[in-house]
Image 1 (cartoon, rainbow, N blue to C red):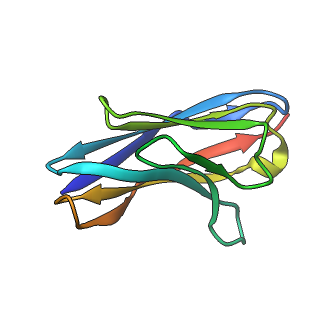
Image 2: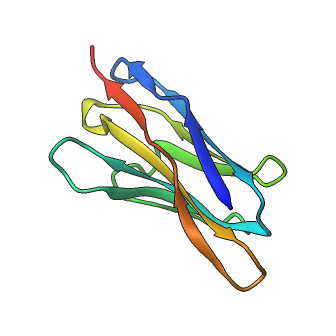
Image 3: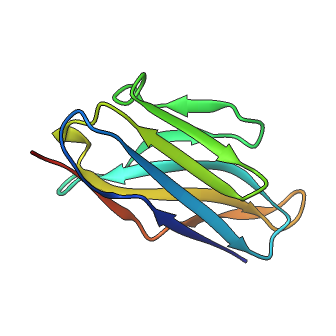
Length: 120
C-alpha cells in the first residue's frame, strides 16, 4: 500500500515563496495523477493543482502564474512551488496520489496536511 508524507509548509511574509514536497512510499505498481488541495478555516477543501503521470498539469485559476507543480517519478515525489504568496493562500495543504496496485487498478491516498501561513 502507499503512504504520503508532506513537508515544506510554514510561515512566510506576503510576496514570499515556499516549496512543498510530498513523497510516496510503500509497495505499489506505480503512481497516477498526483496533486494538491488546500483547505482554509471554515471553507471546503479545493483543488490547487494536479499533474498526470505524463506531466500534464492543471491549475486552479487562483494560483495560475504563481504556483508550479512538478513531479520526480524516480523519487515518487510531487512538488508545489508557490510564489507571490498572499494571505488568501493561508490554508492546510494536502497532497494526494492515485496509487496503482496493478496496471489497471488503484486508489487515492492523501497526505496528512501541512500548514501554510502567509502573514506579516
